[in-house]
Amino acid sequence: MLAAERRSRILDTARRDGAVRAADLVQEFGVSLMTVRRDLDALARDGLVDKVHGGATLRAAAALASVPPATAPATRAIQVGVVVPTAYYYRRVVDGMREVFDQSGGRLTLNLSDYRVDDERSLIANLVESGVDGLVLVPSVGEEEQDAGYVEELRRLPVPTVLVERELPDHGLDALPTVRTAHERGVWAALDYLHTLGHERIALVDRGRTHTATVVRRGWARAVERLDLPHDLPNLSSHELGPGGSWQAGTLDDLFQRFAAYGNTAVLVHGDDDTLTINQHARRLGLSVPADLSIVAYDDELVGMADPPMTAVAPHKERVGQVAARLLLELIANGHDAEQPPVQHTLIQPRLVVRDSVAALTGR
Image (cartoon, rainbow, N blue to C red; front, top):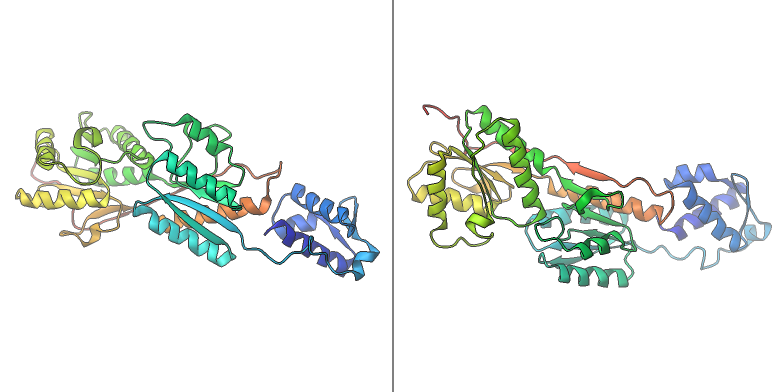
């Protein structure tokens, strides 16, 4: 709720009851006491109420007068700017945001970036200049090459901001609120499931260069250690295989030669496209999935339609978007108070969808 709407309702209550109590208004609006005091100060400056200890009383003239336009303007929809990468992953995240903003009467302005900091800077600056009430961002932070200046710019944005599937590095007390998938737990679930079926030689294939890819690799390393798996397991990233997108000639053959050299019986693949490509190449080589190689996908957009249908770690993308949108609306409603609620970091746990691409290890 915007400040003008709150003040209009406060004045309506004062006209009805003759007075308002600050504690009641805090409860009714779900905002801080500081926010209510500022609302009462504004109404007092307009000559509509007199502040008293614990609240305010209606001035006699205000009881008969209409509410001035400056005090109770027509309700304005909350304007929210969103900047996300072009990756298909975020389409369903945006769907979750849109659902919440539509229900609240908010208006979402979507901008697509391409993991380029300069483009993101420009898009964010344009949204702020247009007068948005808040921002939801998926910025290029937390990756191998870090733009420290960009991180500071994000910390100092003049409107409430929530990061999705990202965290600012260093995790200082001035970090922005975040909502992201608990990727580490998703990776753990996949490796633990494979381990219960007898697999120990489990590779990771992850050609991504985003913050999510970094978190997936970190989660895989922790899971390998916790499960006491062999320490020479290959973690095959863009450094060995080239960046995501198309595969260079011969790279897939090299990948399967690595699997054979390490004795891998299972692989976790980050991304639907690479999972499907690796599954198809296994068949070209005459290998059976899952008899010769068990495969788990990290993400679950397309792999359920593969042959065989792929077991997958499935992030709750719509839920991530919904939670981020609700958190931003709360921050906007509170305004820039000294009594803002503590910075919130929310993890949404993914689920493991078991299909036909994984089998128990026998006879080895």
